[in-house]
Image (cartoon, rainbow, N blue to C red; front, side):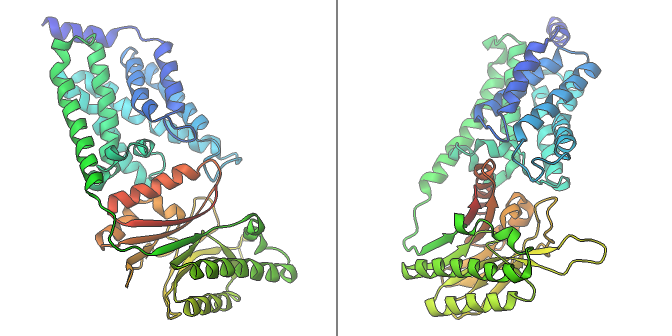
Length: 430
């Protein structure tokens, strides 16, 4: 009776804006532009400290505003909506959506006795992220798991659980810390719960370390090259919509630059050469001629060449916006086209048209290859096709801005860990 009475009193303790302020600051550095990995573990502790000390309705409303605002701050400059008025409502409400697991915890955890109550937040958070990655236009971008990229032993767990495993560990850890805090960290009262969580976390890290130590370099390797935009080719994207008299020679000049650099890499011994996303702008009339030039290079140099093209299509009668195919073609050393892949998931609010959502496969002397283009890599379900098919090498053209380049690379690396393939990524920008 005394224990239950104390627990109820703990829930009714007056909280303060101090905990919310600390949680807000930590949340800004928990994800997005300025990631401090430890902040991702600590922010939920103080959010819980705040919500448990407030009456549910006002506390959760104020907390939702704080989370939405933290999202606006931390993701500014990191999205396709940068500078667009839509950024503010879209990302504020995305932040509010990330508050839903805390609502579930505040309403459900006090009704559950003992250490089992600590499982409400992690179960709610992982369930939320699984739904979030399927219904929002930015897919898995924003998952807590990506913030732990520096800890290679820890993130190996995604090869078994996907992103959910790391999200569960982070949020359960926060819940356990808060549970112990409510009991004033009295060791005799909290040791069994803390020991259970610590044992799980230690096992995950230890198994990840073993996996890293056991992965030996292959006996045979081949040289590969990634060709990306230079200052000289930086204007290639808008060039496709310029005046036809001047745009056509400029597009050919961009192609010539990529072909020349590819030839130099082939001469240096590269067996595979890939270009960054939308490397060469073209249109449906020019495209066959551009591809033939790539085929001639691949045949003459005896290499696998993956050309990345932005192909403008005919504008519709109802829109002045020119649709575009964002594609990657793999050409083999015989000059044959192995695949002509169109990006499955174009960046939200862009003008590229989506492909069919099927990753092609090619069995080659260098291993089983497959492609994905930039934003495709934020879709774990799409890339899982490669893992299930036993792909060994992912060819990944990409284009990033200065602020999001590191995070986009980390997300791509997570797909490689999840599915067990080698990643060859050519990134322009950033």
